[in-house]
Amino acid sequence: MLLCNSDELLPILILLVIGIAVGMLTGMTGSSGVLIVVPALGIMGLTFQESVGTSLLVDVITTSAVIFVYIKKGSTSIPRAVSMGLGAVIGAQLGARIAVSLPEKPLEIGFVVLTAVLALQMYRRSFMKATGMPHKISIDRRYVLPLAFFFSIPVGILTGTLGTSGGIMFIGIIMILFSMSAQEMVGTATLAMMFSAISGVAGYVYFGSIDIIAALVIGVTSLISGYFFSILAHRVDEKKIYFIIGTVFVAVIFVEMFKII
Image (cartoon, rainbow, N blue to C red; front, side, top):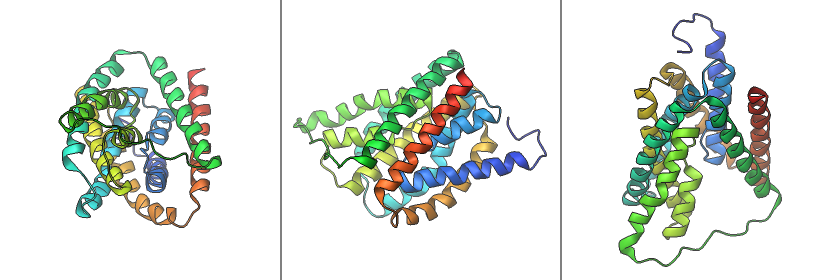
């Protein structure tokens, strides 16, 4: 455990800074804090698996307030979120078992690739005009929820192995299968993401690969900072936000590559 045997103030201060950064990322973009938490905890001495497990618990804490707001405002489709969440639950358990049985280097390489893809997407959104959302495909209503369940299993696997809770991927599934407003998509995807994160946390707790104290410090801090950064996000040009986040992701890539080499 990162903090249990330490009386030093510095580790706690570092965790608070990580929490503020996670709150900034989540509050301004709605993304998971995994790309900040995992490399930061790795530098502080946790294994990749411990960092992923801790990051997932941070996601559970941080998203809880968001979900409460969206459900209160009626901007969440609970049946659709549950169908995707259950698929992700199965995938996350598989992913957690894969992660604890693999050496760290392949997982870290996969994490770098994922980060690079997200960085490119951020820069694309910053420099290019929106190309529009994919259209909902025509599917018999009887098969829509089962398809959402099936499509969410790979999302859960990524949750268990790399710690990404799949918010963006859930939104992609929603855009293809359902007709929903932007607010409903975010609320529904966030609830599905919580299912995925909780399942991943359970898997990592079972294997003893999680630092609960670090997760609580980061998570509570990110809840507070996320509130203020979500307000700031409405005052900053969207393209600038994407550029800043993309640059942060590039920095994360270099840090992870340095560790791998």
